[in-house]
Length: 195
Image 1 (cartoon, rainbow, N blue to C red):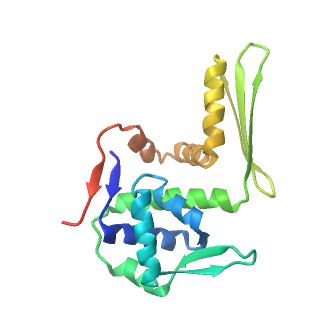
Image 2 (image 1 turned 30 degrees about the vertical axis):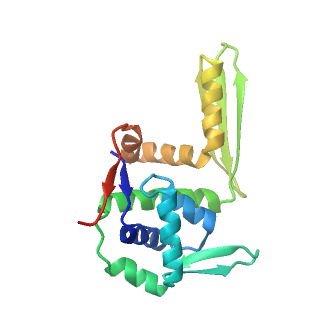
Image 3 (image 1 turned 135 degrees about the vertical axis):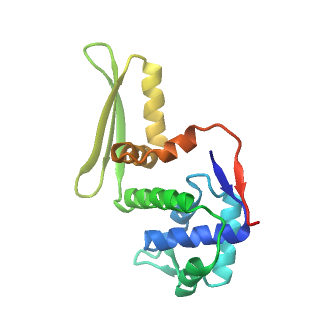
C-alpha cells in the first residue's frame, strides 16, 4: 500500500534523513527527485519542507567547481534528524533511502543511456537497453517480444525512466522487491500524520 507523508515535521525529517543517508551534496533537481520518486512525499509538500529547512539553516547551499548550486545537510540538520520524533515508519525511511542511493549512483556516474529495437531472424522484436558511465558499460539487457507495439512500449518506458529500470533490476536480482509490491497495489493512499 502506498503511503503519503503529509505532516510538515515528518516531511522535513524525511528530507533530512535522505540527505544524511546519501551523505553527499546534490543539486536541487536531484534533491527533489530523491524526495518524491517513491510517492511518499508530494511535490507541494517537498517544496514547502525544503523552504522551511532552508529558512532554519538545517540545509545549506554552495557553488561547486562548475558553478552549480548544491545542497547539503548542516550539523544542525543532522541533529534535528537524529533527535526529532517522527511517525514515519522505519521501513518507509529505509526503502526511500535505498531508492535515493540507487538514483544518486545512476546520476553521479554521468550515465549515458541508449535503446534500440531490432527484428531478429525469427520475427521477434528485440529491445536492447544499455547504460554506461565514463569508464564502462554497466548495464546491457536485451528482451524479445512477439509484438512490435509491446517492444516500443518497453523501449519508451526505459527511455523515460532508465534509472527506475536499473533500480528495479537491482532490486529483483538482490531479492529486495518489496517496493514493487507497493507500486502494484492500486489501493487507496494512506496518510501518515502525527497523532
